[in-house]
Amino acid sequence: MKQVKRLTLGAVVAAMLLSLTACAGMSNQDSSTVIGAGAGALGGAVLTGGSAAGTVGGAVVGGVIGHEVSKPNR
Image (cartoon, rainbow, N blue to C red; front, side):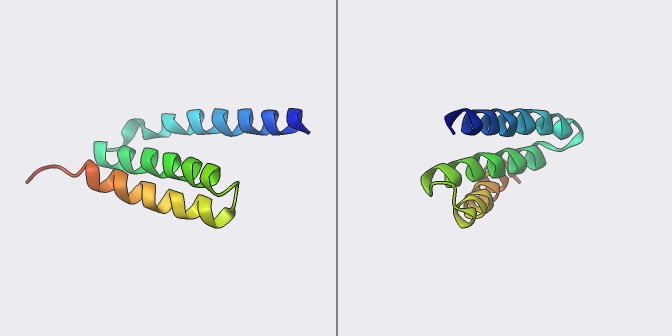
């Protein structure tokens, strides 16, 4: 069972790293939003033991934080 979890985790990490290449044409704020959402989803999943609600909630919170932190000063 541990081997299945390790393989699944490796596949998820590889998919996340490959998806970051899609950020090449994005603005700084857009890429920060995506990275924040990914980090928030990972954090939410870890903190809630893999709960779907925790993962989605973490993604939302992380995305909002990433979006707001990278706002250009006016």
